[in-house]
Length: 338
Image (spheres, rainbow, N blue to C red):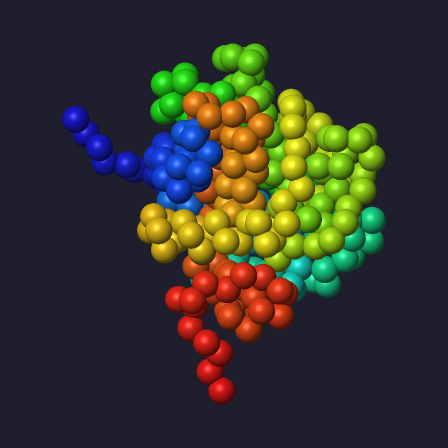
């Protein structure tokens, strides 16, 4: 059988489904993690990027010489830059300067032009998504068709791609034997797309939102009001608004996850099972545990391991940073050097 892959697009997806041993043992359920950190660009956002680009090409919005422009916390930008490279497009990425240096460097190494802007609320016209749209509009006014704004938050090609690909892939890998799917939401594309796909295959599957502290989405699901409390060191997830993609999510249950509950899962997964994942994966695992406890023993819950731990060394594995935030610090993280 010929297994040669001729394009980056053929390398995105079909990531393995992993048994998370400790979370499963703790709950008496089978908790499975979709290893999206194994995608070429290191995150589930490679899938999002590919879906957005293919849709834009079908519509004639992306042509030779067009620049891909996006506002992102980092991972979607990395995915767009790599997919763009493979298909002959250059990329211009706007992102808040508060994001990890590892993600900023990864974007630049991928050849993207990176514009760092202040981290401000979405209602501020300086927000990275608005800044990206404004640059695309200006370029197209000067030369029509010279720029394409990917608009990952409100372009529903995002969730449709996950509905067509990621959801059926999870179903097939689990052999159709799953009781719940849980993940966090930034754009809402993964949660909405996978949720819709799984519900279509089995309406009894529960869909859960894993929401970091400081985000308003869990409150919106549970009470109908966008209210946020606290904050989180997690990057790229949570929101203060309902995006067009999130509106499509068939969410049954939602939990607000504190850092003190999520970060220990990141550390445990690395040291006890060998998987190095980022902070959003810790949020997802903590919520998968909550879903397991809600359903009771004997159920199967799937969640997302979204990106690698290597993107967040200054936060997840920095003893001084963790201590300053009042978060648990494992003994194996080295002490601060003078």
